[in-house]
Image (cartoon, rainbow, N blue to C red; front, side, top):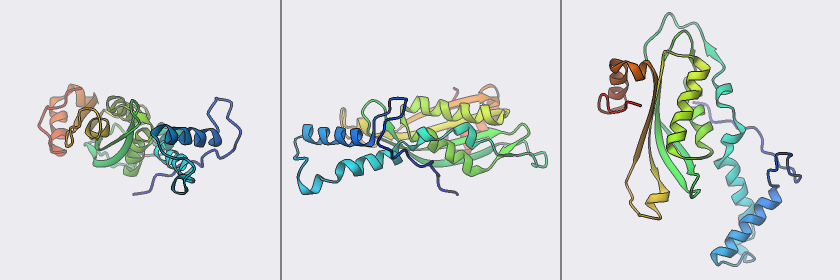
Length: 213
């Protein structure tokens, strides 16, 4: 499977017209947070930390530079009449909670029922990453993935189930490690046809009919 390819980040010092902070401003913000946490921003071990954090953020949040629908634009019509479910399961992803900016780590199961076109399976994983590499809540992430596939492929149905652990509740707050959150979005036939939904749920190892919306 192809690695996710990101457009090169904007490394200029001038702030874009959208008001996005410059790299220097971002690094200064990191130094402020280090100082607020109680450490000495001038000590040797932390001198390069602001630049490292900014580079890490370029990777963590590279999804803002990607268009998920464009990723799905290259499709194939030569399917020999194939009209059964296409499923890519156990797509591992890393995202960040938009409330505390700590990791959400999980896996996504993505399926669609082709109407006339299919897409390369690596593109499904790329769409998951394009949305996951943003500040997110899991419910929105699930809906965005399903809607992008539905918009680009116009299939008979789309199904997305996400299982993830949120460090905002495992490493802070209620401190409940090992707890997973499950969300789903069913569109088209997967929403209206219990048989299609059952096939999908059984294929990902879930209970038939467990996800209805």
